[in-house]
Image (cartoon, rainbow, N blue to C red; front, side, top):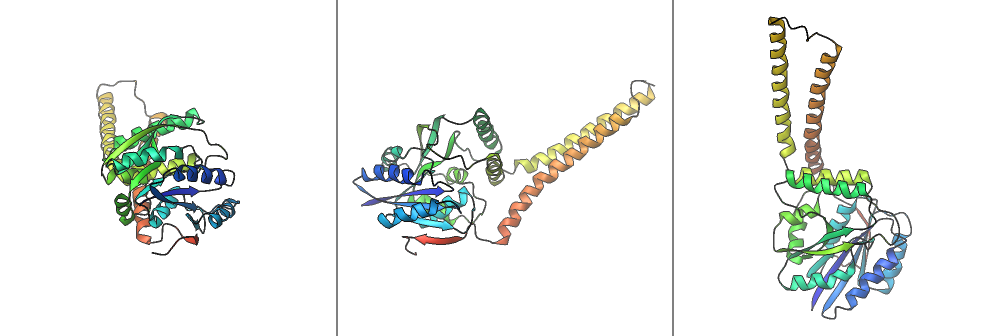
Amino acid sequence: MKKVSIVIPMYYEEEIAQECYKRVVNNLKKLQEYEYEIIFVNDGSKDKTLAILEEIAKIDKQVKIISFSRNFGHQCAVTAGLKYVTGDAIVIMDADLQDPPELIPDMLKLWEEGNEIIYGKRKTRKGESKFKLLTAKLFYSTLNALSDVEIPKDTGDFRLVDRKVVEVINELPEHNKFLRGLFSWVGFEQKEIVYERKERIAGKTKYPLKKMIKLGLDGIISFSTKPLKTVGGLGILSIMLSIIILFYAILSFAFKWNNLTAGWTSIMVTITFFSGTILISLWMIGEYIARIYDENKGRPQYIIKQKINIEEK
């Protein structure tokens, strides 16, 4: 009998943990031809999230728990879950139920047809501000413009993935993983499933602007070197502008034009322009160097404090 694994990161989800488990397990029990397991990854929550999950795991041995020593982030939580799955098909979803578990049977049907990655594409995104919708649109447009790999728009981490794809992802050594980009990068047969993304049924989003920016940087830096090439373009543009200003100054002096006088404004504009160009260039280069530094340190992506109902491989 084939087995399906569900990986669900949890971070301060005490208000929704029970409902999440009920919705997921009710849909899995309808699948008589599949065994299942649910792997909850507690990403350093300090509320009652872990305690609630522990009570669930006592009753349902198909529920497995990985608990981090502190908060390591959503992508690390998903990565940890993927390391411990035992299923033939693996579903990644968030705990907030914005990505409906009712789609799992439809995803499995597409998987049985030979598709190895089935990713959820959002038709609508209810309960999200205009600012978040706009930034999400800009993010995917910028990422695909810079990246050598096309990442489907309006997608998140909600997807079903074949076991062999997960094994490839698990072998990738990089630390700052941008999983939705990696799933596009590895190839395989991919199929979208369109759905309406609902509002959170409880709690607040765990992806504020700061984390969204971090995720965006991970995506751009992991899948593109074009920002580095842009630095060279900025340098050439700056030199050309400097030559134009110099040429104009020479002509002004030669033909005794009176419209050009040395003053504070021209000096400050020149200084600030070149200073800005240099700082932007250093920032771009610094981001890449920081990633190299992180990889070379060799620290683990996460630290597991506790495991429940998980057999060691």
